[in-house]
Length: 107
Image (cartoon, rainbow, N blue to C red; front, side, top):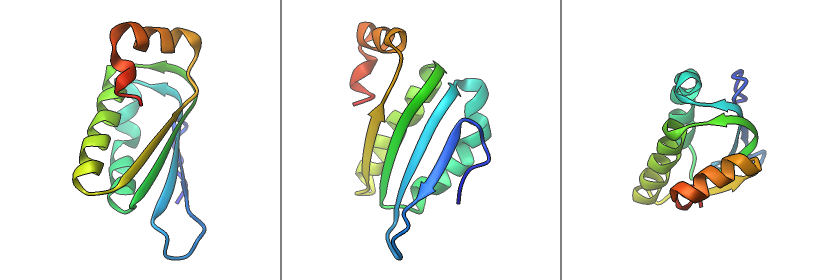
């Protein structure tokens, strides 16, 4: 199931029976764009045991998206699901997160 959303791409594992998925987030990851993919994101997390998240070519990211990722990590931990996060953010975005202390949420 691949997403038609320009900010989220869902790539399921090709191995039969494996409940593993890669989610690539890109472009705008703000309060204005999250509503477009939130339901699909939640369904994807519920239906998979291992979730690999990549942040690539992110142009803008706000606290709403960070809260979504943080919530995922807490929920996944309670449900004993494995979550990994790979970030490829611009120098400016990483500086913002490092200076605010939010970089701990993205690890």
